[in-house]
Image 1 (cartoon, one colour):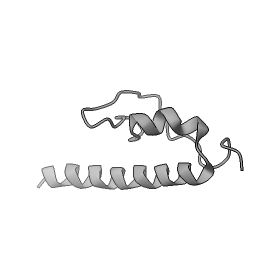
Image 2 (tube, rainbow, N blue to C red):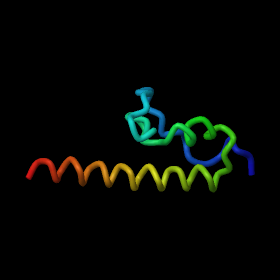
Image 3 (cartoon, rainbow, N blue to C red):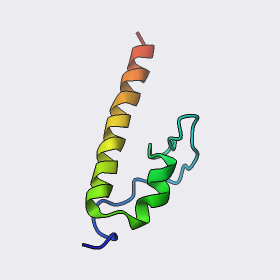
Length: 67
């Protein structure tokens, strides 16, 4: 398995890291972004799972603020 297979990069070309080292565009860490090209398919899938969890947590924070 080559590192070029698997999930596509979640990059949306809004590249800026916040105070928690998370990109405000794709919700990956700086390390995840820099390592993406050399990751295995399994590693990319784990990153995408982490991104999905971060999106869920972010939505919870936004919705909590509306109450």
